[in-house]
Amino acid sequence: MYCILDLSLNRKLYLVGMRKHLLFFSFLLLTNLAWAQRALLVGKVTKPKSDSIQIGVNPNPLSAQEAQSIGKLDATGSFSVEVPLKDASVVDFVYEDEAISLFLQPGDELEARFTGGSLMKSLKFKGKGANENNFLLAYNQKFLENEDYQVLPENITLKEKSFVEFLDFRKEDQLNFFEKYTAKNPVSDAFRNYIMAEIAYSYANDRLTFNELRTKVLGGPIKLSDNYYGFFKDVKLDNAPGVKSHSYLSYLKNYIRFQATAANHRPADLDYYEAIYNLAKEKLAGEPRNLVLANVLHESIRYGFIQYTSRMFDDFEKLNTNKDLNEFLAVSYNTSKGFALGSPAPDFKLKSSTGQEMSMRDFKGKLVYLNFWNSKCGLCQLDVPYAIELEKELANENVVFVNIGMDENEGYWRDAIARRKLKGVQLYGGNQEAITKAYKVADMPSYFLIDTDGTFISTKAKRPSNAGAKEQIMHAMEK
Image (cartoon, rainbow, N blue to C red):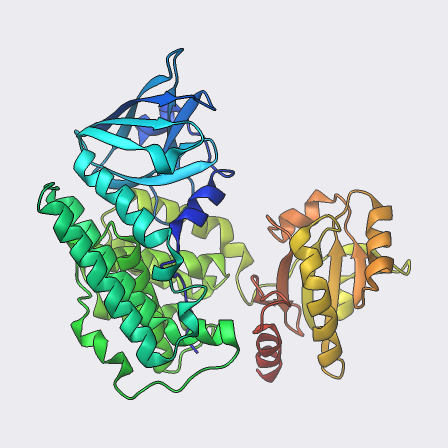
C-alpha cells in the first residue's frame, strides 16, 4: 500500500476548522515578507453579525500559519482592507464562522457585498477580479458543496468501472461549466491556469488514490484492471502555470509516493524519505519539483529521519532559490536534529499508578510504545478501547505499553485509570513541563515507538485507533 499524503476533499471543512486556529501577525511581519504589491477589497455587510472581516494569506506552503489582513466594519457595515501579495494567490476570506476561498491578484480592486449570517448564499462581487471570484464562488457551491460530486462518502463505494465513469462525468461537467461562464465573462490567464489545473489534477488525484481510500473505508482492497493506471501517460507532471492549484501539488506528492511503493520503499524504512526525494528530483522540474522536495524534507524532519535529512537539505539548498523556504527548513532542521530516529529517547523518573518510581531505563530490552495523554482529551479517550485491544493482541510479544498521564490533577488521572480499566504501565507526568519539552509534545495524544536499546524508532507512531499500528509495531520487532 502507498501512503496518501493529501486528498482533494471538500475545502470547506478545512477552512471552517482553520477559523479557530488563525494566527494574527503584525504589520512588521507583513513588511518583512517584502510584499510590495497588494489587492484592495472593499465592501458592505448588511445586518452584520461581527465587526470585522479577515483575509488569510499563507506565505509558506509548508505551514498552516497565515498572515492576516483585517478589515473593520464601520457604523454602516462598510469595510476596506489592503491585502499584501507577492503574486496571484488563493486566500481565505473569513467572516464569523463562515469561510470561502478567493483568488486575488496584485492590482485587484474587488467589491464584496453580503448579508451577515449568510455569506455563501448572499455574496456578490463587482470590480476588478469580480469575474474570477464570482465564478470561484459558483464553482465551489456546485462541485464542492454537493456530495454528488465528491468521492466521499458515497462514490468511494463504487466499483472500478462506475468510479471512473463518475470521475469522467464530473470532469466533463466542470470543464463545460467553466467554458460556458468564461464565454461571457473573461478571466485572467493566471485564473484559467488555476482552474484548469484544479479540474485536471483533482481527477487524476482521486483516480490515483481510489484503491487505498476505498480500502480504508470498506476494509479491503479490490483488484484493479491491468490498465487502470494507464491514465498516468495523459497527466502532465510539469505544469508550472498550475502551481497555485492545491490539487496539482497533491497529485505530485501522491504520485511520487505511489512510485516509491512500486519500487518497494515503505514509510517505515529509514531511507524512505531519501528515496522519494530522489524520485521527485528525477521525475519533476522547476518550481513544482522544488515545492515537492521541500515537502519531503519537511516531512523527513517532522518524523525524525534526521540522519538522512542532512544530505537532502544540502542538495535542496543548491536547487532552490526561495530563501524564505530554505530558512524555514533550516530552522526546522536545527530545532529537530537532536530528536532524530536512532537517537536516545530522553530519560525520566515518574511515579506509577502502583506507587513505583520508574524510568525509561527500566524498559531497556523491550520495545516501548509510549503514549502521552490527558483524561480530558477527547482523542485520547477515543483511543482507549483500541489501545486495550492492541495490548491484548500483543500480550505475548516483547513490547511494553507505557502511558504518561499529563493531568494537572492527579485524582483525575487515577479516576480515569480506574473508570476505563486501563492496562499497561501507567505513569503520572502531571504538569511537568520538562518531560513534554524533552519529547516535544505539542498535542495529545502523542505516540512514540522506542527500540529495545532505548533509541527512537518513530517520533510519530501510529495511534492505536489506526489500523496500521499493530503492523508498525510488528515491523519494528522484526528488525
